[in-house]
Image (cartoon, rainbow, N blue to C red):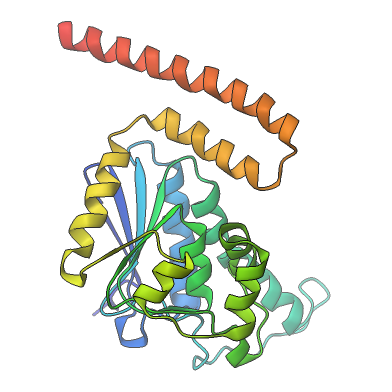
Length: 262
């Protein structure tokens, strides 16, 4: 009998739902889940039928961070791949493509936070455009508890989202926040009762998936460019993308109308 998949994929109404599926470990990340998660997100990014991506966790949690209890086979030191440090870096960096793709793909992404999120999980949540949370959701950076500096883009995303002062408070103070406190801190976009979280999230996701996909693509590109780009360059990019998005919308509208009349 084959083991149950550690990452589940579901499509509904133009929305791709990607579910971390290690509920017995609060969806803690190990090699068995990180590799297929990166693949699932990459597939969603390039699938033209997908208009919005939702990431969530199975059971009572979103993601508790890295699984520190798993054992990994000793690394064999070779001239080609180096030692444990080099191999560990390459392995982790490849898994962290999940965060990059959630942030950069040309379609809206939503973290449906259905319970505790900590460690690397806050990087995945921060990579998404929106974070819709249930009332049982908690938020914990947790890196200070393991002597870690942060991964999955967590220190980058939360500095961009919160500003440097609030991000430093989040990481250095290491306080566990309940859902209401996390919402007030600016970590969650919206808060819903646990029993309606999925329905409310899919309502938002399906609205986005049914919206102007070329518009979302260029809008997200503008928003991402605004994080680091020079203002004059940003205005140039905005001008270009405004033309491209509105032309695409006009052509799509015309083609859809002609199909309806045909």
